[in-house]
Length: 142
Image 1 (tube, rainbow, N blue to C red):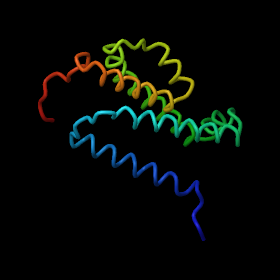
Image 2 (image 1 turned 90 degrees about the horizontal axis):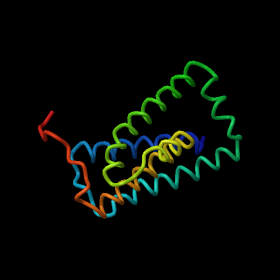
Image 3 (image 1 turned 180 degrees about the vertical axis):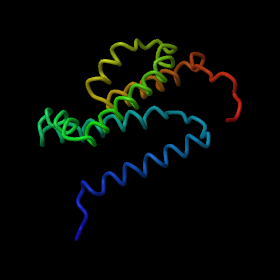
Image 4 (image 1 turned 60 degrees about the vertical axis):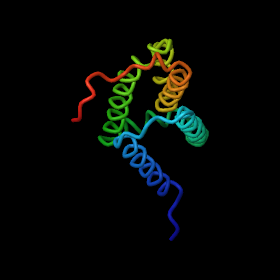
């Protein structure tokens, strides 16, 4: 029996997550045009989200998160991870002249789509204005 698209896509996403995480954990230097990757992810995920909304209606999101304990757990995890990402990204965004409130509203309305769009814009502006990049304090190994 052939696996369905819904069974294969989570494995592809997990592989991408692991590869990206390992690359950044090993300290891969930033590449020129690196903002294109999060911009592309935002676009692809927006497409998938629109497909899902057309297939199931936007209210299905809430139904899934209130269905059972696992739905609640996934909702809590998404909120915690997205909140942490915004807290870490906002200082970088401010340093390059972005106003966080409109980006927060986009992220609140669209989740990862808005978060990746915000990251892409921030990286784009950092590339154009390297002097504005926030340097990590105390470069010491963990």
